[in-house]
Image 1 (cartoon, one colour):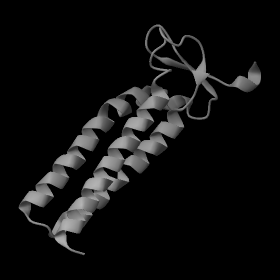
Image 2 (image 1 turned 180 degrees about the vertical axis):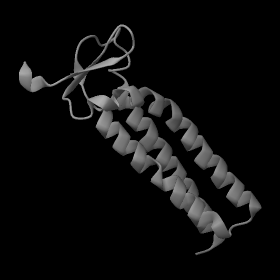
Image 3 (image 1 turned 90 degrees about the vertical axis):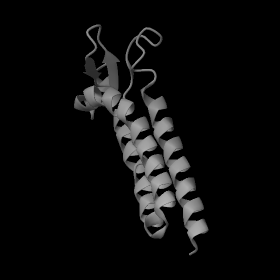
Image 4 (image 1 turned 90 degrees about the horizontal axis):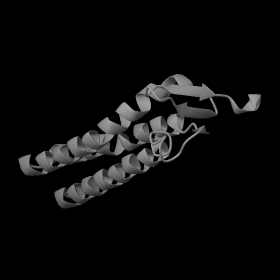
Length: 123
């Protein structure tokens, strides 16, 4: 595989990864905005964590693809991977407090910012 093909493929992987990470953020939109969406919401935290894990695989593959390229190609791929990680950081900080509700069906943000778990089989 030529260097140009490796570079283009690495760029496509990084863009795809950015879309997956941004799409995972939409699963938290309702829960993290209780003023816009009050009440018990569906618990999408496990799905978001899985999507973040999937979204971090393409940057690793992109960095592996460009290992034989010149310094400029490796630097661009590294900048793209760091940008994807920068997109991931606020999502991780939003989903981390919800992880104790992993098996719950519903979740609601309390006034103090914590999250309460609800099992919808009880109501």
